[in-house]
Image 1 (cartoon, rainbow, N blue to C red):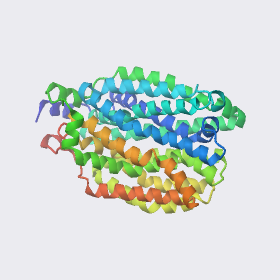
Image 2: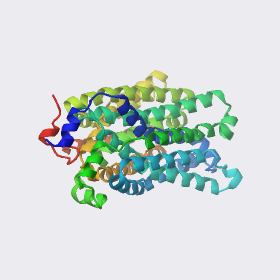
Image 3: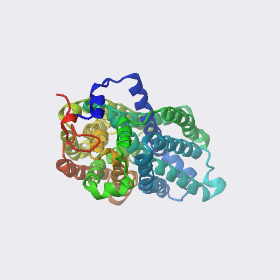
Image 4: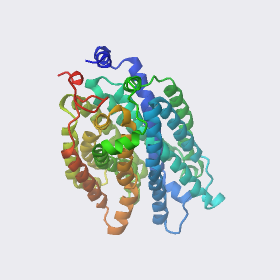
Length: 447
C-alpha cells in the first residue's frame, strides 16, 4: 500500500467543513454557468425582439437559439486550453480563471444596447459574449468534477461528484425564479426595456465571491500526489487521445441523453410551453422550477446508491427509461395543466437523474490523474456541442418542419438510444484507482 493511499484511507471520510467549502468553491462556477444559460433560454423571447429583429417572430426566435448553439462550438477550444492548463499547472488556477471570465461575460450582456440603438452590432456583441461564456464553460464542468472527485473519499466519489449536478440545477432554479419574479412584478414593457438585465448583472458579485473562494482552495490531493511523483504529462491532451480514446468516446456518448434532456426540457421548456403549447408564462416557469427541485432530490438519492451498487447500472437503466418515457412524458405535457406538465417532465427526469448521478465520478474514473482534465474536456465538450447546445435549435426546427409539437420527444428518445449503447459497453469503474484509472488492491471500496 502506498503512502498516499494510506493517507487517504486514514483521512476523515465525512463531509467536514473543509470539504464542504471545497465543494462549494469548486461547484459555484457550474452554478453561474447554468444560471446564465437558463436566463438566456427563459428570456429568449425578449432577446429575439431586442437583438434579433426580423419580420417573422419565429425566425427571430430561431436566430436567438442559433446564437445559443453557436457559442457551444467554441467549447472544445476552451476544453483544450483549460484542460492543458489544468493538467499541467493545477485545478485551482484554472478554475479561478474560468469563473472570472464567466461572471464578467454574463454581466456585460446586461449592458448591451438593443438592435434599435446600434443595429447589427447588438447581436454581434451578444454572440461575442456568448462565445466567451462558451470558452469558459469548455473548461468548467470537467475541472470542477476532477477537483471534487479527486478530493473525495474513495467510497463517496459519486455522492461528492453529485454536487456538480446539484449546483447546476440550483443555478437553473435561481435563474428560473429570477425570471418568474421579474415577469410577475414588472409589466411587459418594463421587463423588455430594463428588467431582464438585472439577473445578468447579479452574475458579477456572485462571480467575485466564487473567485475569492477558489483562490483560497488547496490543490486536490490526487493532483498534488501526481505532481510530487513526477507523473505530470508534457502533452496531456495528445496522450489522452492516443491512450484513452475509448474513454473519450464513452464520455461523449454518455453525455448525449442527459444534456439533451436538460436543454430541451429545462432550458427550452418554458419557451416551448408558452410559444408552442400556449401556456401562461408564469405557470410554465413554475412547472419547470418544480421539476428542477425534483431532479435535485433524485440525483442525491441515486448518487448515494451509486457508491454502493456501482455506476454502470444507473447509466444503463437511466438511458433505457428516457428512451421509453420521453413520448409518454410529452403526452402528459400536452395536457397543459400545471400538475400534468410537472408529471410529464418528472417522468422523463427520473431516467435523466439516474444518468446524471454517477457522471462526475464515472467520467473521472475513466482517466488517470495526469490527463483527466484534458480527456474529460474533449469527451464532455464534444457531447455537449453535438447533442446539448443544439437542443433548443433542433427542437424548434423539428416542430417547424413537422408541424408536430411531439417532435422533441422523438429527439430525446434518439439521444437516449445513443447513451444506452455506450452505457452497455462501458466498464464499471467503482473501486478504480484515480491515479491510474485501474482497479488496484489498495483502492478497493469498503463493503
